[in-house]
Length: 332
Image (cartoon, rainbow, N blue to C red; front, side):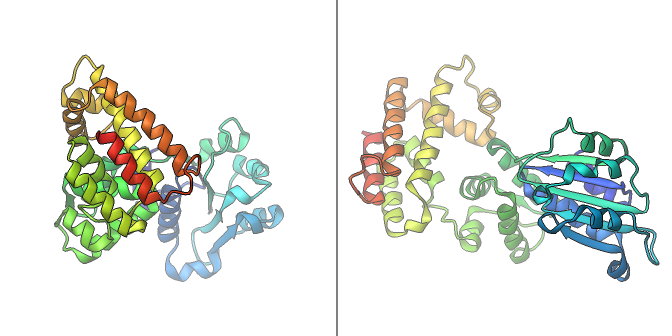
């Protein structure tokens, strides 16, 4: 069962006695857990029938006692084990998973890592409950995820605004959702979210950011690149040299790959590089401006500046000066 199916079943009050939610992405774990908490019990039933325990404080005997308790003036009890990765005896819950109480909904929130699928706890839970592995959304999937999330909330978003969010916030979904929530409060439902909205309400400059710097370099626009670098010099919190180097390294390796593709159509490039078609089109155009020999030289320069950004052979040069030197060498 995928994330949307689980949420749908919970909202339809189709509950399982055990949910194991584990994996690297905490957003999906929190969303499922919070939805269960919202739908299992009515407000007046929670005082006597809802128990939340944190892994670091959990005691196996007391936890089992809570799980085997009977509901009071309610059909069900709800027990949530949060931060379960801190519970050292988690595998000892396998005996409970063999014969869980039908009147208890038990939710295990095991974040930032995964449980071994070969263990008996997972195997037993699969028989009567749900085991959900929460994976990070990969970078190339972020634009589509943003578009889909906003569509569910009744909004649309243009390509540049999507890329601004994806490039500047990244795949920290909790932060990304918080930023989107700001927009959904400010803007009327049905609005088209633009890069102007992102700049005005989230604080990401639509003209002076790493995405626009990469775009300027891709078009050999020295004037625009220098303006962005000067902006970064006077607004050091806007970016970091390591972020710039990382994004440019990704850009140059992508356009190097395009040079050797037999098919250079936008759809083929998008599929091969796992990027949004809009990005694929931009990269294809950029590949025509940088021959493979220059790309290889630029990648070597980026390796050098990656080390210098971390203090190796930097001679205490300010990051703003390093960035200016980097852009000059990449474009000359």
